Image 1: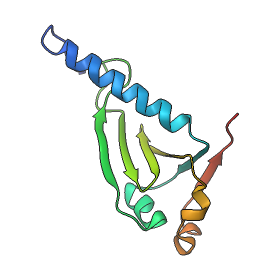
Image 2 (image 1 turned 90 degrees about the horizontal axis):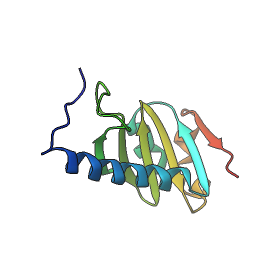
Image 3 (image 1 turned 120 degrees about the vertical axis):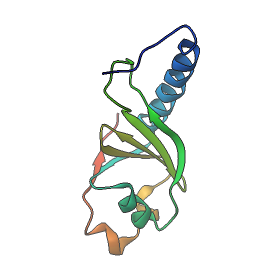
Image 4 (image 1 turned 30 degrees about the vertical axis):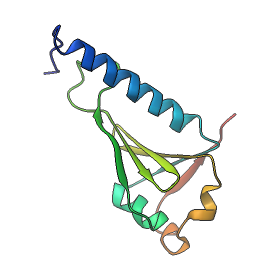
Length: 115
C-alpha cells in the first residue's frame, strides 16, 4: 500500500516533489547524458571518486507508489539519478575525459543523444 497524505504531511510532500522534479530536470538537461547498468558501486569505480548522497528515496508524482522511485547522488561533477533501478549520469563537462578506462570495458555505459 502507498503512503497516506495528511494535512500535516502535505507541505513536506510538495517540497519533496519540487526538489525531486528540479533534480530530475538538471540531470535530463545536461550536455552529456548517459545510462549505466549495474549498481552505484560501478559509478564510483568508473570515475574513481566517492559517491555522495544528494537526495534519497524520493517519490514520483503520486504518493501511491509502493516505495521510493528516485534517488540522487553526486560523483565529482556528475549528477547521478537512480530512477526505478536505472542509473542516469548527467554532466555539463566532457564525461569521457573523467572515466576510468580500465573499468569502462566491463560496464555497460550508453550515451543518450540530447537535442
